[in-house]
Image 1 (cartoon, one colour):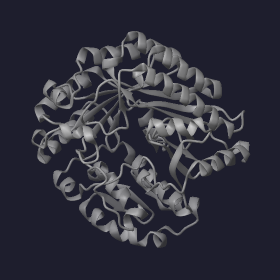
Image 2 (cartoon, one colour):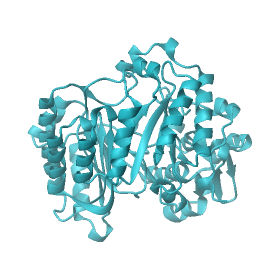
Image 3 (spheres, one colour):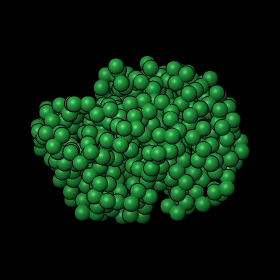
Amino acid sequence: MDTCTDNPVFDPGIIRRFDINGPRYTSYPTADRFTDAFGPEAYERWLTNRRDGAKAERRPFSLYFHLPFCTTICYYCACNKIITKDHGRSAKYLKYLGKELALQRRFLDPEDNAVEQLHWGGGTPTFLSHDEMRQLMAMTRQYFRLLDGGEYSIEVDPRKVDRATVDLLAELGFNRMSLGIQDFDEQVQRAVNRLQSEEETFAVMDAARANGFKSISVDLIYGLPKQTVAGFERTLDRVLAASPDRLSIYNYAHLPTLFKPQRRILDADLPTPDAKLHILALTIDKLTSAGYVFIGMDHFAKPDDELAIAQRQGRLHRNFQGYSTHSDCDMLSFGITSIGKVGPTYSQNVKTLDEYYERLDNDILPVFRGIELTADDVLRRSIIQSLMCHFVLSFDAVEKAHGIDFRSYFAAELADLAEMAEAGLISIGERRITVLPPGRMLVRVVAMVFDARLRAGRALNRYSKVI
């Protein structure tokens, strides 16, 4: 049985039983475990370790740029963003991104410049003017070489993009695009302060296809205020008619105590838990009936999309941008709050513009926290990656890579998994664990069993619900 291509089975009873708060595992350990004991000096040391290590062992880089500016605020948003219409602020920010590029490069081998993955996230990357986009890509290419066949993606707000902008993105080298839609229902759009027409959205998709973009992804959110099953079904029908390559169906996490914009959303306007489950069930049924493959968590893709192919071939990876076709690269990140990964470390930049500018004015890397992974962290990260990406965990592969006896090392975890096995979420064989179709939507819960820091005791209310 090709477990990767089995679609999830929606079982409301199982979901209600196991739907708890939990991490999304774009990293392990998760970002809330980073500490300020890992700062600029530690990050500098790991950059120079790469420079001084064996050249044959260097993988190409992945680059991430955080572009935080938005002209309007979407009330559901939990991202780090700056609401402004002043391009003087983005012009200054680009100047400092150039400083950070130069500073990080100072600690690397000048010939070590190959990049196979690049992502502009936000905020709204398409806030930048055409000249600013050209400037940022020119600065990037000054220090790095984007390899042919790489994955170069950008998050796009269709309300801020015209055909000329999409033409420019293709000219700059982008070949993948993620479009935010959330919901086409006008009542929902008004409740979250994001009015967006179908016409402008599909015009961007058409322009991307005309420019040869390899993959077009659409983001939807279920659980938003004023949302109904019938209304979301209409949105799904319109989106499916446009035939995107990938879809991400996110669960809205209402955490107004943590994210101030969400305080403008009334609790009374939110769909009930049962309505949310009905929306999710409808979504799974429609997408799988339309031929989309369930990749994991909240991601679906066409069978011929690179994500689905990578999953079938056992090459799927997960990083801070979600699921990826590229394996474990060193990720250099630039801009406020951005998170990078070099060697067995994660690092995160400062959160405010003032801190960011002050650090770079003093030639200090703007890292304010991070973590250096232990051997146990690396082991558990590999297990969580395998579960999240492939729904299968081979004891033999883990033992060979990490020199342990799986059943002895994880005796407590295997005991804790017994309830999930009894409920039909997973099967535990002699030499492997398989996440079964009823457990696919709850794979985060399975992965949490192997999270040593959660096992040590830590409040889960900082995380969103799994479903």
